[in-house]
Image (cartoon, rainbow, N blue to C red; front, top):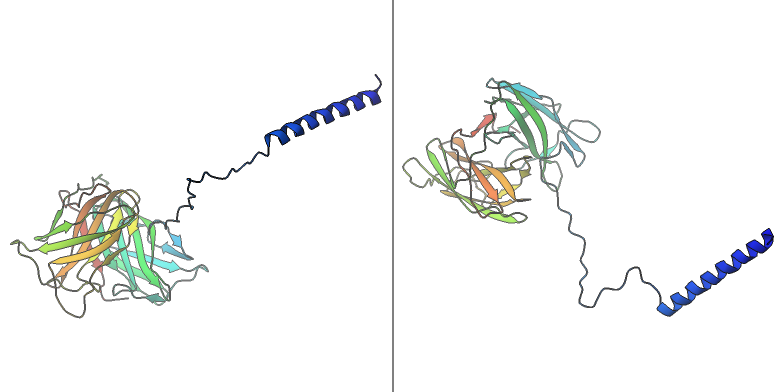
Length: 312
């Protein structure tokens, strides 16, 4: 057989095979790559986008926390300086007040046993600064909680801080419904539920066990609550149920609504004001088990307030 005859024979065989396949396809019917679901099946929309917890990013929504002080010595007075910069690298100088301040600065150790709620002062060039003394060496997280002028909601940016010195590992205190600070006992009622808003109520009693009915307004309410997730220190947004007005006093209970992004262990820091002095009670809470909060068993959490109050 010459080459032309071979090509003709191959073409004929190919045509026959294609015809047979076509016939089988007609007999069977079309194959549907995506068959219609059965009548009883349901279509599921894609899951809703969950907003990332606050404080885990140094930059968000075009703003960046520029922490100028990246290290401080343990147990010695120091100054913490930082700038909030916009997308062009310029210092942000326009803020809206939230809870009585233009910016709240939270400093917490990674093991959540040291906590500071500070109110720094802003210079004309946009640089914020505050004095601070941190008692123990280790890794810390700095949170700048603020509302840019004209923004619909607030923003919390976070950056790492190192405290130098001899480091000793400290375990997180176990959960307990009570905490004691300066002779005051605070009891927590309520639990954290992952993925939804939870109600938390704190009741303050004095050294005699009597309810404190003279809680004073602090940052626009009778208490201020910060919640941090153990592990990555995600910053939870917490809101008081009742705002304080003028110089009125109240107590002994203060209530908040907290939204927990996941199951896990959290540390709650409650600031309350009595006799003109702000104190902080710390709790450990496990979300997802129905168990309520923590305590300040040895070694106690180093909580406190430093810096200048009453400034921007």
